[in-house]
Structures are given as C-alpha cells and as structure tokens.
Length: 602
Picture 1 (cartoon, one colour):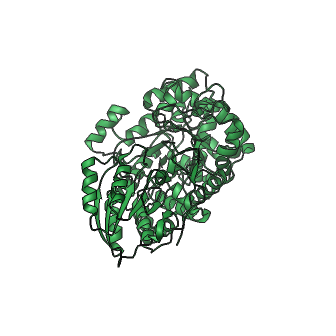
Picture 2 (picture 1 turned 180 degrees about the horizontal axis):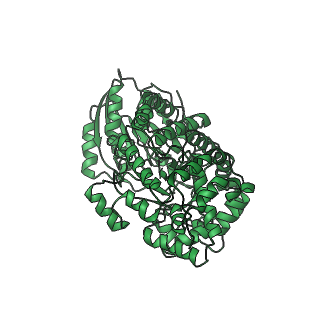
Picture 3 (picture 1 turned 45 degrees about the horizontal axis):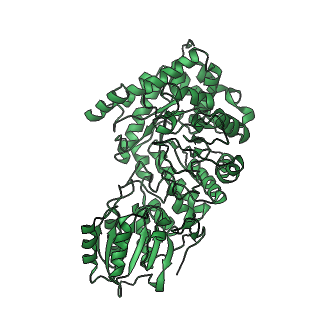
C-alpha cells in the first residue's frame, strides 16, 4: 500500500494554488501526465491509494444539503450507497466528483444549490489530503436540464442547429456556463456531439445539433468555447457517436454498423472539432461499433476506441468520463465489478454513477493492488482530474456565494438574450394560403390543444397552457385544452366541440407515429373547416404524418422559451428564421419531404 507522507492541509492547498498557472495551459500529448505539472504531482504523492481510487468516481447522492438532507433522502442514500449524506460519501469513498440530479433533490433553488456545493467542497477539503470536488450535471438545455427556473433556460441543441449561428450557440453556452459556475457546478455534460442521422433515434434526437457533420462540428466547437470561457468544463458526448441507432443505451446495448470510413466522415468531425477547441472532457457511449472494435465491446470499455482512436489518433489528453455506469448498455456484457476496471483499462478517467459504488470502488482498488491496473496508470487518470480542477480554479476558490448567485442566475439580460436566441430557431414548414402570421383582429379567438409530455426543467406547465398564455399576452383570446400524447376518442370529440366558432386551432404535437391518435385529432379538427396550425414540440418529423393542417412549425422542445418564441412567430411578432438541421422524411422514408436547410419565412 502507498504510504502517505505527513503534511498540513494548508500546505496542500498552497501547493494546489501554485499549480493553477501551469494547469491553465493546454496540455498536449507531449506533456502528458506529471511531467508538465510538478506541483500537482506533489499533491498526488501525498494521496493514499484509497484517495487516488476515490478521485476517479463521480457519484449521485440524494439531498438538498451536504450534511442535513431530508429523512427520505437519508434513507435513499443508505439504501443505494451505504452513507447518510453527501459529506459522508466524500469522507468514506474520497470521491472526486458528485453529479446533481433534480430527481435526487439536489437542485431546488439557486441558493440551495450554492449551499449544497459549498457543503460538498467543505467535505472534500476536510479530508486527510484536501482536494476540492468537481461538481457536474447534465444541463444540455432543451429537453434535458437539471437546473430549472429561475435559472435561465436557453434553446437546446437542435433548436440552435436550426438557427445555424456559431455566435448564438456560443452565447447560449456562455450564459448557461456563467450561471452554472455561480452555483458551484463546474463540469457540464454538454454539448452533445452526436450527429443525428437516424430519425428513429430514441435517445438523441433533438439533443443533437443536426444531421450535417460539418454543421454539428461548428456548433459543438462554439459551445465548447462558450462554456469554458465561462469557467465550466464542457463535455462532448457520446464518443464515438450515438447518432445512428434505434436503441436506447439506457435500456439496451445499441449497435452502430457504420464502416470505419463512414465513422470518419459522419461521426468523427464534431469530436475532432471539440478536441481542436480545447475540450476539457469527453464522455463515452455505451454502444458497439464493430468496425472500430471487432471484439464488440461497448465503447466505454473498448481500448481500441478510447486509447487507439480518441487518445492516439485524435491526440486527446483531457479527461475521459464514462456515461452513467448504471445504464444497461454497459452492464450487458460484464458484471458491475468488472465494468469500472475495464473502463479504466480502456482509457477512461472518471467513472460516473456506478449502480453499486462500494462494489465498484473496491473492484478498482483490488485491480490496482493485484497489478491488473498499474499505479502509474491510476496516477495518469488522477493527474488529469487534478489538472482540470486546478485549471478551473477550484484549489484557489472552491466556494460560491449567494451574492454571486444573485448577480448572474436568471438575470434579466440573460433571460432577454434567451428569448432573442429562441426567435432565431423556430422553423416554419408549411403556410398554406399565407395563413400566418395571424392577426388578432381577424383571427383572434384561438383554441390550443395537444400533447402534454412530462415537463423538463424550463417549463411552467403543459405546453397547451404555456402556448395559450403566450398568445393571450400577444393580444389573442386563447383557450387551452390538453388532449394528451394519445388522445382518446372522447377527448378528441371534446376538442372538436371546443373548436366550434374558433378562428384557428393550434395543435401541439409530440413525435407523431403512423398509428398515433394525435393524427386522428388533427384530421377531425381539420374536417370541421377551422384552420389548423400544427406545432411540433419535439422532433420536427411530425408534419410528414399530418394532413389537413394549414400551417406547421417546429420548435424542437416544449420549454417555455421555445413555446413563447413559437407564439411570437405565429403572431408575426418575430419572423421564422429557423432552417431544418435534419431532413424530414416523407411517409415513405425512402423519400425526403423537406431537406436540410428548408424553412419558410414571411
């Protein structure tokens, strides 16, 4: 076992602070590991083997407080992790990071998040070898966001793809990163670098910037600059590319059958662009790509993919973080005790959210003690993690303040910018007879019906209610009637009856399938002679399955910022500048209804 030399906490913090200047310089493969960071190497030398192993793990934990969570969260922590609190988690396993989730009650409000972050940092600095933690979350925006209002919610990736502007993408990321940093969240698992070339993709979809690799690459690089310019480590995901699959790696092990040349031209460009932009971390995918690894291991566990391609071919020497290790895609082939060990051997540094932390932590510890993983290999990963923490200034200033939160989180300038960005994203796909824009003097009485998917952060209620409220603010009379994702015959007839006498019906649609009763709803409404405006609130493909609609728009998410922008476009208060970042296939998928770049205006 490695013996820890005695030293004071003050000395270690001083050493860490002295390393910041060196750590903020981009490290190239030629300066890999401790050779370029002697101060951090000295911090590493003070760490026990157990502390080093702990640095690799990024773990979930329940509770709004690091030391005093609610009893239900204590019970959940004891059941799933074997500790009571975040502070106990840090003290017991020396974890290098913690990931925030809204469902784990980590993100109730800005001051609470800041206090939780500070409590976690105090726990990290109270260890025998004091090291700050890297707190992370999935704040992609759009349909995936863990921090909600009053924080600023900006348009998500595919909406930004529709805008097509690197400047807007960078600005959106800078706003988001500035607010995350104020909350103590210094690693964001965004942007998504997957190229969504498969309309049937169940897990990526609008989380991607689009289907054009070059356009995606430009926007990924822009968001890397935006996040990291705000002091937050960006994370390009999911390497080597999760865009062409019909399976969800949360529940299955997807196979992607791109040839190596197809991978180079379709999947690789955004990751190459991220590396060139100085990306701080890259997340792996739990997918199998046989052309890249004939052994058909998930990419997270594949040395040919992570070391051979990412490290050696792409020249990346930053932090590699696994996707969540509790996902079925990485657990299909190997047991939970082998997965973290194989991920390290493949080339990963951070091990995210294992289902059984105690099992995973001890498995890695045993692998090092038994010589399966050398201590030099362990040190290489720990140094990458320490280097990133130093670059982010966590050794110097690990804490945040309420004053800092109040100064930037949800400030008016950010909210106004989010609205302006959203105005550039809404895409108009059909406008028969020039129905739009609507004039409240001639088409002022609206019925808003449609889908009501589960609300992500950034929504204040069902999409129908949000749209109706937005129209009312613009001078319309608008009534909302939520008909659901699968409207029943009775609900459809209720909507048809409510449409009588209305000037226009606005229908929010959500991933309309060939057999969806959302189609029936639209057909029945259109048959009454009332003009129907369809607003696709997730994937933009719905229009291919809807007949009889006079106008159709795509918003790419159902967050308030996007729905308000759609209402402004319908009312003519904003022009529809968005252009499709993905092709919309016809009902016969062999044909394209609307190509990439299509979009109407007025």
